[in-house]
Length: 261
Image 1 (cartoon, one colour):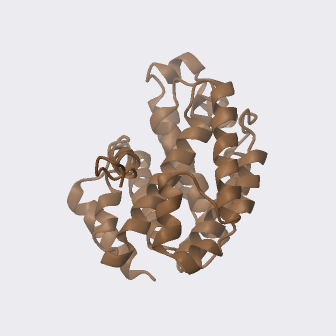
Image 2 (cartoon, one colour):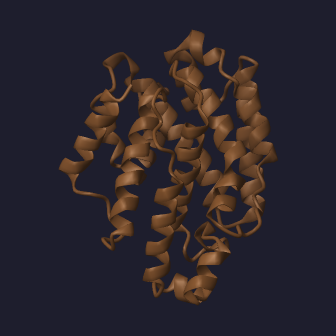
Image 3 (cartoon, helix red, strand yellow):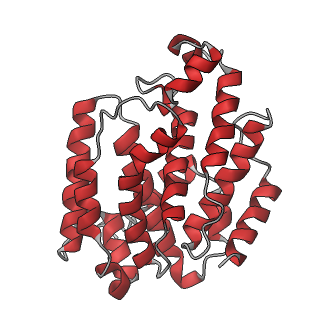
């Protein structure tokens, strides 16, 4: 708490919930003693995603990425400055302090913020796998879950889903690979103005196929995100657009995720 009694993490958790409201359904199935850690980790991933992919100025992106890399390396050395990392260490001291935070920091430094346009879907996912793998290595330790390439792949696809939601007017063209623009004869301006429905639907179908078969053994937050993203991509591939599935269906997916240990 700060001097005024406010919880400093509330701002960041609120930003995450506004962006990913479906994760509140997943939180229903999180044990009470683990909710703070669940919220802090989700909010931290939101901050990292925003920093790596969603800032319009490359110099600001580089500066913020450097700050977060320094923070992750510092956490690995037993010191932290951010309210979210403070909560994560306090909420699970033995697991969290043993997590490979420093490796995550180095992965952030190595992340190519000016990544080349991907040739195809496999390339688009592969470009994100080093950073996603570093995130999952920390996540698995913090939540005493299994480390798997499937979990990292599901996170990479999640980032691509988020770029599709927010990035169609950005210079990275939502990270949609070049083969889809060629296949559909679509220009960047058509994508930006929403005149590329067939391309977007095709991209949703390819992202759904790129998802791993399962993420068994992953942390609850990853199992939930995996199921929510699959549901959204299935709707997109079926021509139902990018809107979130109805709340009862999302709750059902959250319940399934909680049971799929």
